[in-house]
Every structure is written in C-alpha cells, then in structure tokens.
Length: 112
Image 1 (cartoon, rainbow, N blue to C red):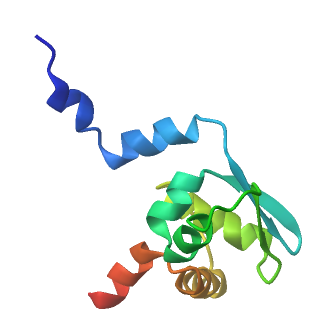
Image 2 (image 1 turned 120 degrees about the horizontal axis):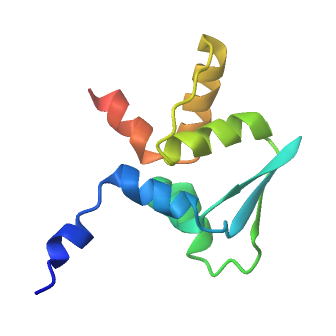
Image 3 (image 1 turned 30 degrees about the vertical axis):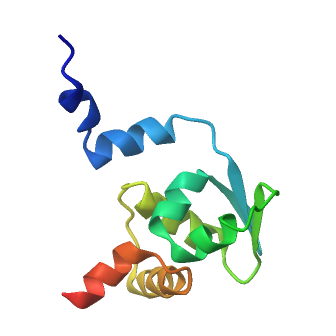
C-alpha cells in the first residue's frame, strides 16, 4: 500500500528546494539588471504579482524599472526561504519593496 500522506506533507523548505531546482519561467527586469523567478512562487507570496499574472500576461518579462535588481533579488531570496544578511538601510528598502508588491509574509510580521 502507498502512503500518500507522507508524500504530500513536504515541508515548505523541501518544496522551496524542489521548486528552486526547476527552470525559472519569468524574469523581473529592474533599472540595473534582471532577476529570474518562478511565477508560482511570486503569485503565492504577492498580491501584486497574482493580480498581474491573472490577467493572462503573455510575456515572461515583468518590468519594475523603479527597483534595484539587488534589492529585488534579495526579496526573491526571502520568498524562496533563503537567508539574507543586510544592513539596516537595505532591510528598510526590502520591507518597503515588499509592501509595495503586496508580499503577505511581511504583513504577518507587522501584525505581531
């Protein structure tokens, strides 16, 4: 007999590692570079990306020229469950970007 519950109850970290190993399917183009990501990760974490992609977006490119590529890369790293080490100023920028993009994980921190 096959135990499906064990197969279906992967931890978020396991899922993140599995997703990270797959080819990315979108590119976020910023003012000074670009960052690759998976649409599903962006949509699950961000109301901004969910709204954008639910409008049958045909392009694989998301243009966010107001943001720095390094900042977006670190926000994406956090969405994938990776640790980032930042100074206070960058932390403030990452929180600001996350709020602008409707990233729910940061909303939870504000409520506590």
